Image (cartoon, rainbow, N blue to C red; front, side, top):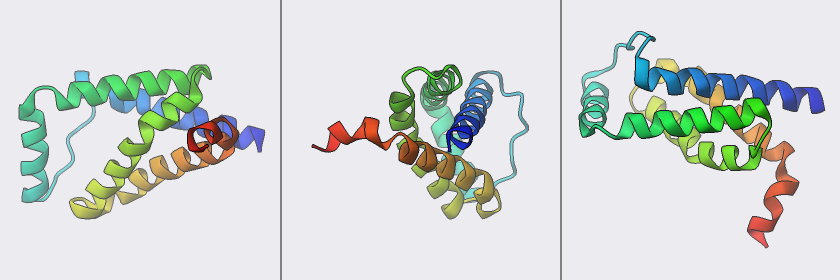
Length: 123
């Protein structure tokens, strides 16, 4: 299980680093979205702060996971992000649900394998 945990941590961490860097440097091509989704994403982009804020959160969480430092903190930061990624794809872009689900599953797996470190939050 330790190997699975390590691989999951690296995969999720590297994914967050790539997606976080993309929020600033936009090196990944934009996916074609339905009109409603495009309008939603455009509104978030025009706010001027949502995508940079998400990029910073992704990068910090990704670094924590890759460097194996403050892993529970990174997983807590990524929990609502994972939920929103899945919700976005369910609502607006079903063809992207596999990647969204992979992020959420990796996050849940890592929360599960680190559950002892989360127990004090629920006492």
